[in-house]
Amino acid sequence: MKAPRMTLQQLKQTKVATINQDIITALQQPGKKKQKIPVGDCKQVQWMWEQLAIWSRLTGIEVIKEYRFHPVRKFRFDFAVPDLKIGIEYEGLMSEKSGHTTLTGYTKDTEKYNLAAAEGWRAIRFTVKNYIQVIEQLEKLISDERNKNM
Image (tube, rainbow, N blue to C red; front, side, top):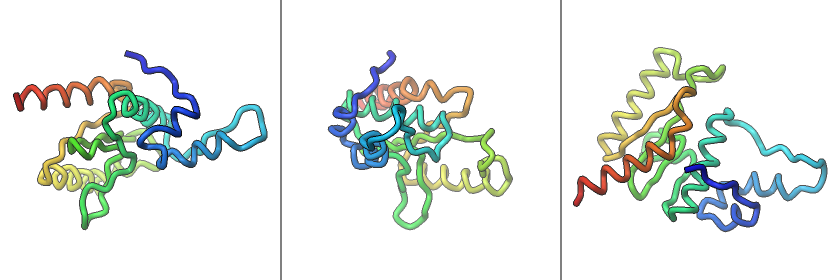
């Protein structure tokens, strides 16, 4: 299912509107015909966030970007569904600034995932080859969990 693009007004009304404030502000600025959305994340992460924000609005299930899941450690999930304890990660293996390609970075990732699992979190992970499956995999995980609890 391909979700429709959101209008600026719809974006303002989402549960995640405060997170999107930078984007909303940039889109409201007068000026050039085409406004640039503030960038920092790679295009795959930006695409995932757009899809997750639309999915969140359609389902009413909150998705948070850069969610710190542990009260002491500074580990964060790229995206999270806190109410269901689901973390969503994009593994930027091909990125220039990726820490995932070094032994130290990979080890930190394993610490993060192990700590998250010990805290009751489930993580779904994506790369450049499968990130477009984020909604499909998230819905499957939620469905499987609901069926298990029946």
